[in-house]
Image 1 (tube, rainbow, N blue to C red):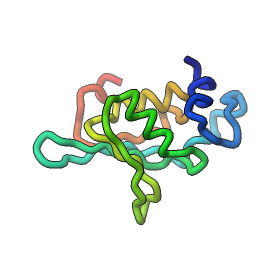
Image 2 (image 1 turned 30 degrees about the horizontal axis):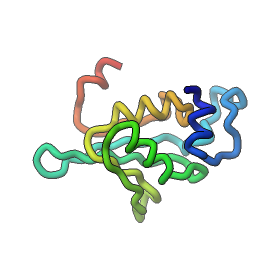
Image 3 (image 1 turned 90 degrees about the horizontal axis):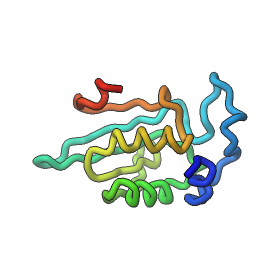
Length: 125
């Protein structure tokens, strides 16, 4: 399934969906400066992944619905006083989120800023 079909399936609204209109020095429509993907340790082995920086042009609730279905986890959109709308997902979904955003064309790989404790897959990439 191509990026265009996936965007239509999610019914994401944005000003332009044609990736050929973007030049290398411009950001994708779906991002602000960069997208921050963080992991937070809860109690025990439980973790929480947060995604911040996706542009307001996209319906974050529909993105969460797609994340939940694709990654088999629970998630929600919260309103943070400093960062605005932030997506929260259960578990360590950093790798899945990065892959999803790049494959669907919502962000370039160099716009993703992954935070948190060290993991093996970050060293491989």
